[in-house]
Length: 398
Image (tube, rainbow, N blue to C red; front, top):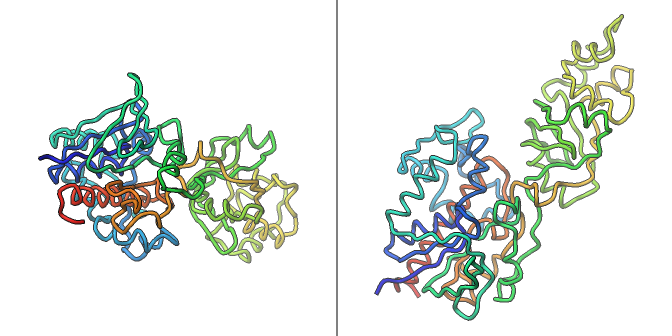
């Protein structure tokens, strides 16, 4: 008799679990809350879909912080090289960018997703959209649908409901309470890879909103992040900010500093700034001697008039205090920290008190920076949950 699986959540982790289950011969139905699958993946691909990273495995693993050892076996089974091979199998070749990030050659998410959905269709996976998971009644999953409530029974379940960031795309963390009732508690869901909130002056905000700060370094305690970010009406967003947002979120009130010229020493800047200004405006002087752009110069003035003395001015350029008041909330965060507690699951990602129920993806209690780390782990965790669920359904393990 064919075994059945209900995969709940059609993001990267859920699609991965469904693929592995179907390839194992299990009859799979995939349930999605919204009208179409993988909406967040599609949004992530608008600027180029960063699938994974080409750095060595030990460094790759270190990006997961304290949860690295928990995620290690899943990444060893399906890591960055496997992601690239899997994409190639779907007809989407990849390339490594100058930063080590890996992208599909199409630089888009939609061709990859279309090929993936075609594969799932050929494997017989059935997709049921507009099915909003509400919890369990006994061994049945309960959904709210346009036709009313629906109960679904299956031999195995895989939950891949996502976190709570960008809730308009489908994942809003509404699963926390019903899963807690089913004996799967979570740590609080918090924003990860989110922007900094800064109260700009009206002049700075209105003039520079949407403009980039390039080749800077941000320092928070002993953590340093280099790259670029963009001025928003509410603060700063971008890779250099996201890399520090988790640490700052957990230590609100600590100071953040901006190095506007990370490739120049303070002594070298001071020597250049000691040259006579003559008839140049202060802005032109900074532009020519310190090679600062308009946004950097305006930022230098946000906290008050910059010092005129060369050594003090150079020190301000190298360590400009940034009045960060917090991080952007879940509605603007790229990903979510917190989630289902690892200790409630066994090493196969099955709930200890609910045999046959597996949990995967971002809804687990882990976080990672941008750079392909989020997607790679979601692929790996989804495939691991799918494989374990298939083996259990087919009686290949206890």
